[in-house]
Image 1: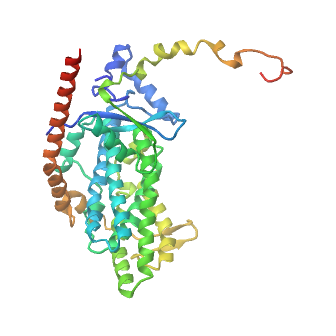
Image 2: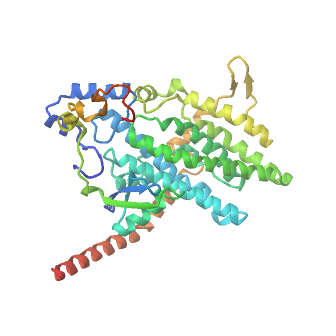
Length: 94
Length: 339
C-alpha cells in the first residue's frame, strides 16, 4: 500500500456576501493542486466564487465530549440575550 | 490524531471521553439520546464500534459503486453518436467520480484510510453494487442506466440525506442534486431513440429487458432475508426497508415506461387497487447472489480495470509528491536566505 497525498479540508464561498463554508475534504500533493482539485470536485455547477483549502492536520478543534466544561459559560449568562430585559409594551422601536 | 481532520474522530474510540472521566454506559446513553432526538452524529462524537464499522462498510461500498460505475458508461464516451451526447456523458461520468470522492471523504471522517479503501476494492475485499457487473453492448444501455439505475439510486439515496451520520447525509444531499440530471438525460436519450427507427426502438426495448430485473435487485435482498437491516434502521442509517424502496421504484417507473412506449419484462406486473401499489414478480435472487459473489458477466473486468488505472497512475502520484517536496524545500531555502 502506498501512502496517500495529504488530506485537505475545503471551504467554499457560495456567493459574494456569504461566509466560506466547509464542504468536505480531498487529497492533494500540495496547496496548488488542492485548489484545482477542490474546484473540480466541489464547484462543478457554480457552487462557489472562492475556495479555501487547508491541510487537515493544521486544524485544531474542540471535542464534543468536553462540551459541558467548554461551552457551559455561554449558557449561564442569560443577560446576554435581549429577551432578558423587560421593556413596557408601549415603548416603540426597541 | 486531534486535528487530522475537521472533526475526525479518534480511531481508538473513547479516549477523549475517558479523559473526561465518562464511562461507556453514559456515552452510549448520550449517543442513543442523540439518535432518538433525530439529531446527527458527527465525526468526533463517541459512537458504538458497530455503528462505525457498519457506516465505514456501507459508505465504502457506496463510494466503490460510484467509481466502478464510471466504467459501463465510460465505454461509450468515445463512441457517443453526437457531440451533444458525448459532452453529456462526459459530465455524467465525471459526476460519478465526484460522488465517489465525496463518499470516500465521508468514510475518512470515521477513521478509514483512503489508500486502504482503494486497496480493499482492487483486492476484492470490499464490494460494490452488483448492477455495474452487467455489460453495456448498445448505446440504449446508456439511456436505460440513467433511467433505471440512477432512478433506483435516487430512491435509495434520497432517504440517506436524513441518515443519522452527518458527513454521509451531507454528501448525499450533494449527490442527489446531481443525480436528477443523470436520470433525466437517460430518459431524454431514450425518448429520442423511441422517436427514431424501428431498429432504435427495438434497441431500447432490448436494453429495458436486460436491465429491469438487475435494477430491482439494486435494493438488496427481500426484507425477511436482510439480516442487518433492523439494526441499521434502529440507528437511523437506513430509513426504509429494501422492499419499501423497491416498491417505490416500481410505482415510479411504470408510468414512465408507458409514456416511453416500452414494456417492462414482468408478466406479473399489474396495478393493485386495494394496496394502491403495483404488484410485481420476484427477481431471481440466486442471480443476485451469483453476481455479488463475483460471478457476474463483468466482475473480473471491472476490478482489473480499476486496478490497472490505479497502478498505471502510480507514477503520477509519485511525481506530484516529489514535485511538492522540491517546491517546499525551495521555498524554505529562499525564506532562509531572506532571513
